[in-house]
Length: 218
Ligand SMILES: N[C@@H](CCC(=O)N[C@@H](CS)C(=O)NCC(=O)O)C(=O)O
Image (tube, helix red, strand yellow):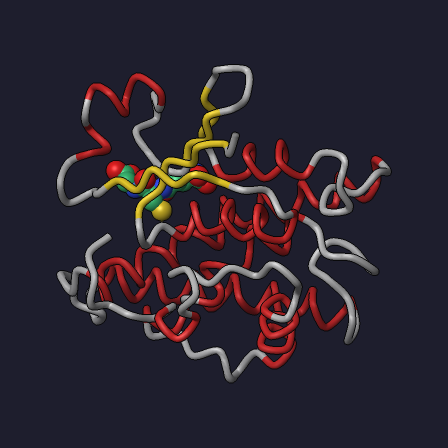
């Protein structure tokens, strides 16, 4: 039976899980919640998700697992997406940590408030700071991908890892928050290579052209 993934239609963090499941050929049954409807504050959801956020995966042993990094780690076990040697694993962990600490938040905030909710001023101190942090994070990623060379991946040389999956969604969606990617050629080539991998899943199933759509609620 397919594992159940609690997500929202537009969650970039849940997209990471759906991407990896697609690459691995793991079927997922989506339970798609709505932030606007208050689903993430319902007692039923909080019973399986103490952190009150998506993604959450219902694991085969009857437990539930939150946090995208933890879910990617679990799903990738036994596959090339989680490399076999400790030094490579440590490098993957370093980039997962970077994604959570420096990459995801500014890019997610810019997309959420400037493109989806349209409720903040891009010239406000807070959003100028997010834009600065987002560009800094993209410069670090660009430099790393340049170092890795034309066919390289974020943390590994010959095959992609869960670090690539983790960094893909909020990088791909950066233009929604006003961060154009043309200035980052290594990132642009890497995004295209990920999108060519067998099993790639766009944000909206079967509709890659809708990745940047703002017409439907989260
Ligand atoms: N560190 C978490 C962040 C998860 C997260 O921010 N989820 C967002 C959706 S993309 C969410 O549930 N937001 C609703 C809320 O925080 O109330 C992860 O990587 O899974």
